[in-house]
Picture 1 (spheres, rainbow, N blue to C red):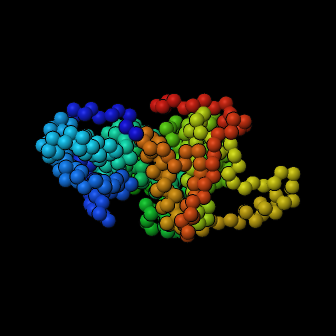
Picture 2 (tube, helix red, strand yellow):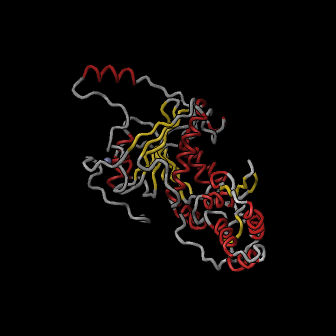
Picture 3 (cartoon, helix red, strand yellow):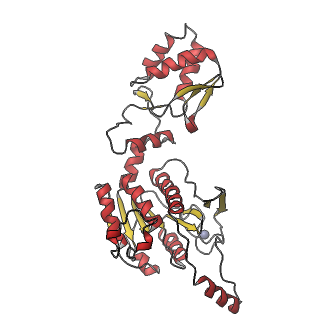
Length: 366
Ligand SMILES: [Zn+2]
């Protein structure tokens, strides 16, 4: 929610996302998730008059004086109507929405989410995010963050664009085939928002030394699929105090999380989240390695978009400081065919060999 409540003597305006209407004999104030029923007919006219009054900026005193003139001296009714409009996120600071500003529609989303849009945008502008993987998920997360005004993106990928990537890696074109993904992505992001600083890093990331060579950041997003990389990233980030978020697909399931905030949430190693080779069964392990060695993911555009959009929304929540990221302390999967949710708790295990001694990350530590 808002870190600083608006001063009531400052002008506020009816948020542009507020709509009103009747359904089944009830007046509804607001639309979508903020919709609120108003059953009492004596409130309808003064409430609509007050909402109309707030189409231009008004102080609370101005609004209250206006309202008293429409409630025939009924103070209780005037207070009820005032509270209906003031509760929630129906009124926003007058300066919040400038339709000409490139981030204005996002500002409305942040206000709708109970945040101070100006503060959210500032936090995003100060943030640096490292993306490990610039493919189907990494590329879509990157363009979502860049166009939303995240300050700096470090794009890490050793791969080059291939023809079979184009079904889901939508920022690449046929003319880009053979070029390094990180560099093409950086070029495309610069075209979309010149204020976002992009740093392509064309190299493999396999071990601790590789990770330590990358710039420090406020959040690391992993969408690369090298075997064992997730555990290596987790150990590095917990040791380093860097929050990180996993985003991927498991065949036809779009998966994001956990968002690991070292010292605060659980980590990748707190609980077994994926299948592993059996211990003490070398023949079974050998057979499994042979079978799994030929695995090729049925990667698909819509599933990539689903995972990347939900992951990006959690990045906004975490870096922007509003709401609660859906992947905090859990790994979530959306089944693309039947839309059911698969959730794995990733609560912190105090005996976890990786994160038991981790201390909470300080905000703005970088
Ligand atoms: Zn742990």
